[in-house]
Image (cartoon, rainbow, N blue to C red; front, top):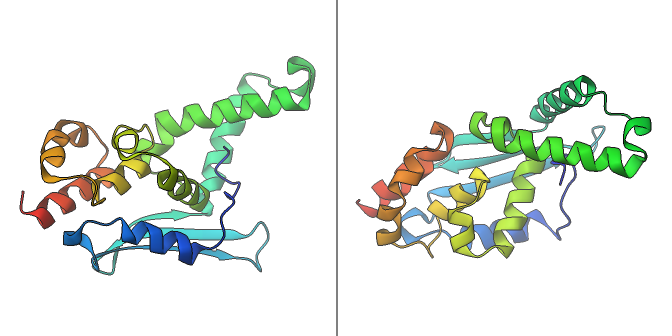
Length: 184
């Protein structure tokens, strides 16, 4: 999915309630999720954050999508991707999606160049993904959610230390927060 597209969901308040209901007891009332869209603005810009004790730890904002588009455009333009080369608009779209997914994995996730669409997509995916898959996901946002999930116990947290240490700082901080909250 291209992150600029909004996932289909009924309401943010319902998703938020589900996500915060999955928080471990040690993080209840400490971690909160925020998401809003500015519907009056062209393209319905949005902003999402994950907060700890009312302090914003990571933000996912619409303006990061512009940086993503620029990266995609450079790759597609460098490779001379156009309708004539690929044969159809759907082939161009598929190529753009592949470029997007590659950049998401290689550059954007590690550098946290993520927009509100990436956040809302991750939330909707997380709610339909089993916890084991989320813990080992290439999507760092899913891992962040898993680190704070009540379905991940202390022993599992200890086993995940090496994997967590390999993550970029923005994602690793959530693992540390959970460990501190659990007294590990």
